[in-house]
Length: 149
Image (tube, rainbow, N blue to C red):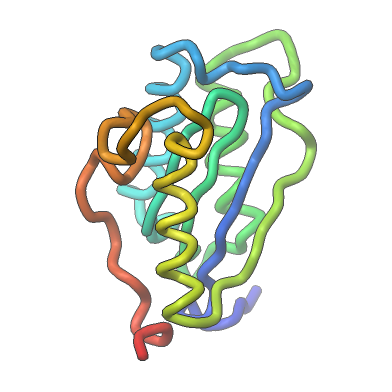
């Protein structure tokens, strides 16, 4: 199966928990999702540019690997987390939202949107103080070359 070149496949993705349950209010559960995301990132399944884990959803800015579809990348994250959690209940809403990123400005706006999410929600006063976010972890993968002005 052939996909568009990796450089043109950067997305803002959002996945929401089933019934919008606040699963990730529990530190151990948020840590498990973060570990799942970071594990698949380190396996080279996708580039990870930014992320945040909110109480009932997560946002990530990713570029799937050349041989990985966006749907498969999300299956790794959502399915991998569900498998590790071993919950008897549904964990996620069935689908996910995605927006393709096609410009440097949109990329930078997405990073800001993701990392400021906990501030907008009133969970912290500064993005870097929120533990489950790329803002508190330092830089991840840089902006893909095709988006750089």
